[in-house]
Image (cartoon, rainbow, N blue to C red; front, side, top):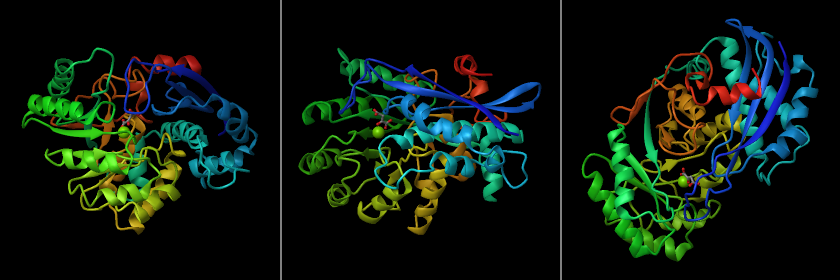
Length: 387
Ligand SMILES: O=C([O-])CC(=O)C(=O)O
Ligand SMILES: [Mg+2]
């Protein structure tokens, strides 16, 4: 078998929302298709992928470097030992030929997007849902039931506490037991008021996580920690700059409850530095590395190895991004769950149409691949690129 084409198109996923750092009015994503010469069930096998929100589409890098390296590689050199399927690790190595280490920039997003499509193709060629293929290769039992939480609570023009409460009520009505809102985009007393409004709305039905999107300097992060510790929060996320490990470490002296970070760390080396220097606590904190932003699952497997070396369980990982790729990794490799954005970033995020959230969990469906074919608003968009 061989890859006969790789296509990319940059699509808008814009919305009027704002977090503490950016607005999403010009947000885009790269949609990619890895076209193979394999036919399964009367249809050509095409793997699809896209990048997570928060980083923009990667058309330039994909078209100028990464696509051609794969297409120019000897097709045999990209196959697994049996020669009947792609080896994602070999495709990854082909993409990363002639790239120096460090300085990850956003090439990790370009590679992560293509890597998603490669794994989708590999699982389709194997005729398995990706999570089962991953579990089998890791010699472990898959658990199709995955914890998911509802992310939202953004700032947007004209949004008052009543609208915020109604949004959170909507998530509870759809079966979620943990909801997340943004902080750090308003003065601290206004954020306290917003938090109290949401806590009042959700009562004992759910827990609340808050996300500062890396906005705070040490002093502000500590001021917020002192305010937030008055409340039984699920987590306090990304208080300071993602690469400021000393800030994260200092914060643990002021905030005994769970914290979360990692969505803007793009390599296993950066993840290792977080565990070395960030003072993260393996008994309560959460790691949010998102493979679609950080060189894909091939790299995420290295990150999981780093976690193991540092005594962290994969169960402490709840990736950022709300995409089905991480759902498969969670179900296949025992992560603690996955983010979801029930009302945002459609049609890319979310679940196949027949999947419901019940008691804060979903059950993975069983079609081969990542599961994009089960989403009626997504698969036609993907098939426009290639089928
Ligand atoms: O607002 C964003 O950039 C998304 C984000 O941080 C999250 O989902 O945790
Ligand atoms: Mg976040």
